[in-house]
Image 1 (cartoon, helix red, strand yellow):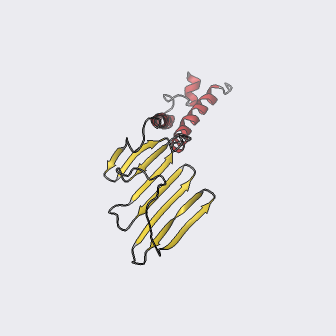
Image 2 (cartoon, rainbow, N blue to C red):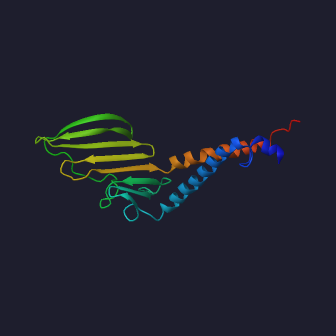
Image 3 (tube, helix red, strand yellow):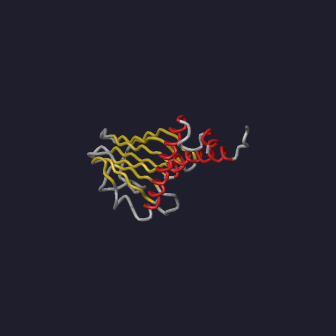
Length: 182
């Protein structure tokens, strides 16, 4: 036990290792929570089950269209409409002038499209399609509130929350397998 404590493999070892151990335990706890959210995606949809943080800010989880992902954390603004997922929204109109800003590479893009109608009204669409990230923000002139949706793959928090526990396990394994030097 003395050799292990000298190398700081246990959380009860040196005081300098306690914050790292506490952070590793907290991170492992959150990784388990993310896995629980992934299991919830099999039974929950954002249209039926969501947590309301304000009257314009809702959080839920979703398995995706085909369930082919680990699942998604879904944050959106409209409980009645639910998260936007690619349906048709009337934006712009006849003789609308479009101004596009951003970039596109294959199936990935990031940008803003501004639609100016002859009457002078302006509608805006902001978008982001990156691996594991989907974002849409509609600012339509005749709507009282904007409609927005952010979906983030659960892979991102799962990977982030498993880094510290993996380092802790590696350090513990290494301290047990070091040759003993007298």
